[in-house]
Length: 227
Picture 1 (cartoon, rainbow, N blue to C red):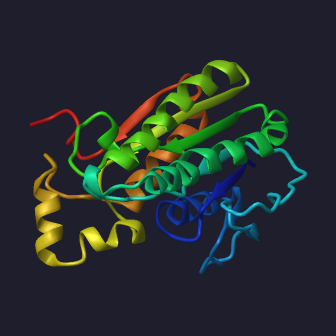
Picture 2: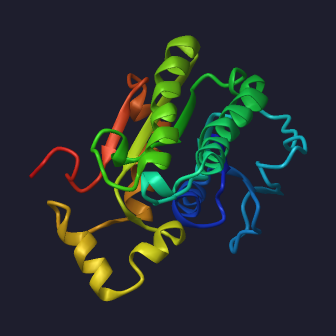
Picture 3: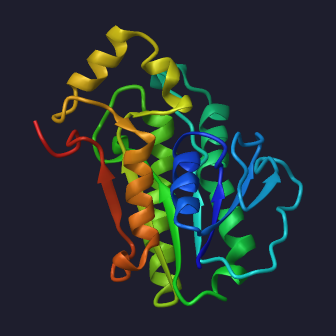
């Protein structure tokens, strides 16, 4: 039975993934700022942006999924240095902190895998996305670098979603008009949901993806490649 550590499993994609894994009787360890609605195998309340040490875990970890992210949409002229630093701290440095801290647990596994999240805006130019695209672009670079360094012991992959119906994106789709406009921008004529991304994550964690590493998987309703 596998053990997966999910950073940010109290809502959205992390919650959907945790629930799916637990339905398969896998062990899920959750680290989140908010207490999750449903009980997980192990839960630690922790703010990854704090200077406090991460919770220690003694057992092997087969998968790490880093879910925290930001959608800081502003015009480039309105963005301040602190905006870029805050996005980079949350999206990149916090992920690095977690991977470094739990690396000894990963190497105890025979099938270890890491899944990170980017955004479709990294490879598809989108107005007002300069801060989030800059930090998530770093995540895609980190994915390739770690995949090369950790091979063949640990696989590292990334998922680049488009707009997904999660609490993080609520203000972008909080009216029927906004939701319809966002859906119509995608060739598949809908936005994503947490299960769409959780399913892709679960695949990358699984042995079905055992020959996949260093990749960024676009789960985006076709918006990055189709007109």
